[in-house]
Image 1 (cartoon, chains in turn green, yellow):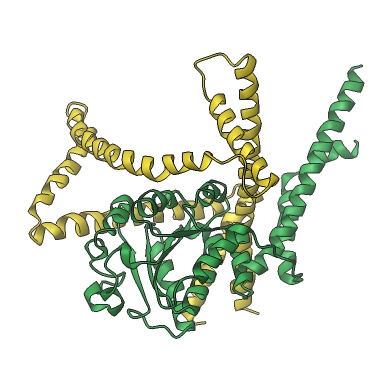
Image 2 (cartoon, each protein chain N blue to C red; image 1 turned 45 degrees about the horizontal axis):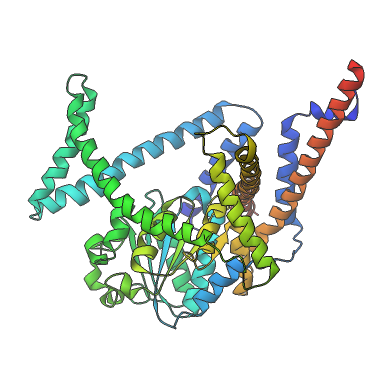
Length: 278
Length: 208
């Protein structure tokens, strides 16, 4: 049996094992690799950097727990930048499964790190059903949509919300999404209320979101773990995404190798069959 | 790490490994983990809908004096008529309301917020202003949009000039699929990295 015939009948579990090894190896033997900043990540960083100190921003956790690996490093990197600039952060989620609790956990963790006080420097509005009504309604009054925060405290008792009534009091929205809710932030909030939006999306969603960056509807974009690693580099921290990109690069090399091997094997097998037939 | 946190880490790690075991072969441990996940999701959804819709948006406002909210409540109840063959036509009233409001809301927001801005972004100046590279990109964008649209025009046979443009459209679509596939691979690998990171740092780290 030739090498190519053996490869053709290779048990797919060997491929799983190779990919697993490529993921695990960089955790055991870290090898820092250069991270190139894309114009989309740079423009998002510049937009946040240009915000006046102490302004109100909205960070939206529109992702499911399944994509934490990609979206959480984006959220953490964005909050580092915003809290460094003393921005007042209002968080919410249009995702029922875990969205509000992820917003609560991450924002409180980052708030504690920067010595911020809940209710004064940041507020988690939580989740409300029906994103179209939620996004439209907040243009009139945030309190009418979220009478209380995620813990049930009336907004009137939270000092930060005294100065935030609707989108006109929000300087910037950072949407972190693994689904199409980002489209509605574009078509409802950006188009109708003119609030600048930056987006951090999963890699699967990123190709679609590039069109919004090109049209200026998103000021910038972070695509998946790579985008998070770029932002970590821009704000000069080394966190989960930077570490994860080492595995990412190695797995990509493995996949490229397998694709090349598979195609060469296919052509060799085809030419051998032709020769035999002749 | 507290005892409760340690228990959570072990539970998450064992369920993760149970699901990964499918890569070796289908097995009872995998199926147990899968069924637990499906059951939890269904149960959570029922509780969530009850709390966030029925209680928060219907029952509490009605008790607070917004009595007119019984109208959407009744429309919701009418949807259950679909369970009866004889009375299922009643549910069309609710569906008509949903379709009418959805069409009304989305017609404007989609046109104003997505279709027109994206069309406007396709109308690019060919002189660029930023040199040859910008001009070339503008030409590629315009050619890509037009040829892809032509590919999806099925009222005339794709032969001659129309056929050539449609073929060019296929190339643009294939390149787009390639970009999407590449990003999807990156995304899926990222999810695996996240799980492995958890297993190494949090789980193995908890007993080293």
